[in-house]
Length: 205
Image 1 (cartoon, rainbow, N blue to C red):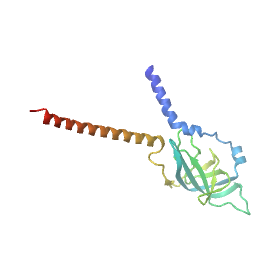
Image 2: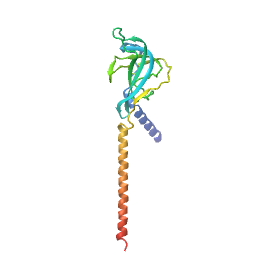
Image 3: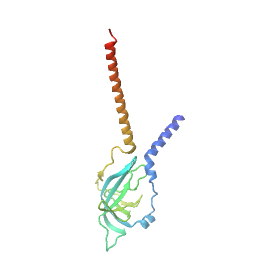
Image 4: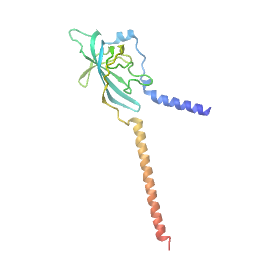
């Protein structure tokens, strides 16, 4: 019985470690009516390119910025003939770990693939690094109409550092402990040799 409760506690702890950032950032999906009402732009078309870029984070919460290029067939909302929206349009969204599948719920779901025909529910465009991006509504700003794919891959612009947050602290602490142990071991061996030398020199007549 004790072993059962121990395994249960350990399992719960590991699940919490995997899910804590996503749970804290979780948002209930918006209804179709709400998506149409609150979006500034609604665009339908084919996803032709995607990029993913690590932009920061700490601990287990890593933030990735995605940029999606859509060849627009139709603007269902937000286009003005006197000041037309760009076509292709560049869409952005953020995930917590950069993968297509995020355990415990992604910041954007579904995440489209290159070649998909989608309807995108978007906010007003804003400049980011001299590029006009239209943020997708979270957490379900994409409606996939046709899930065909082109076979093209997402372009990775930047990856998270190998060691960040608590992992870096643990790694540094481990290196420090190993260094101290190595120093103590070498010092002990040195003193042991000196002690034997003195014993050989003065202990024998």
